Image (tube, rainbow, N blue to C red; front, side, top):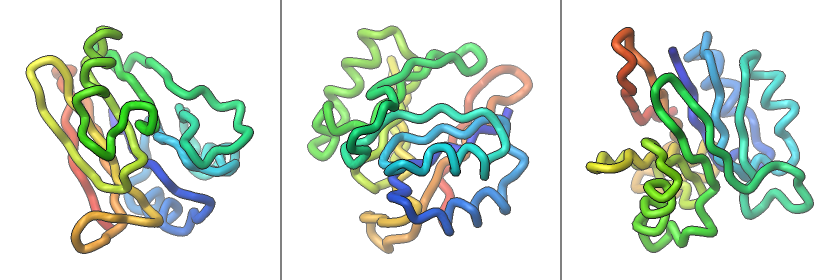
Length: 159
């Protein structure tokens, strides 16, 4: 199973379109917020099931602030991250994921890609496809793959 994880597209979808052309087919698109009203268009572009949460710039959105979903044998906690002070680190996010009995915590908000493997939870952030803030400032996303044995693998990718 191939899952595309993105965040912080901020109404600029050219890079997302490029990513989708490169990596399709995908089985699932996960968006960690700040789509700013483009969620229906993104779902149409993806051509696959999509799960999305509201970000701090999704004003007046009816999107859920957080979600818990099942992917294979994994329980996944999705949030934009701003309610967990992710600009200062992922400790609060990890605690919430463990409390919710989730194996994977996904977030956005910082515009910096990260994969952190821990004993209790894997934490990932795909970065931003439109306003990257990490060194080199390359737009980023994560591909998550569930292999035949049911194990999850994560890879940060750049445009």
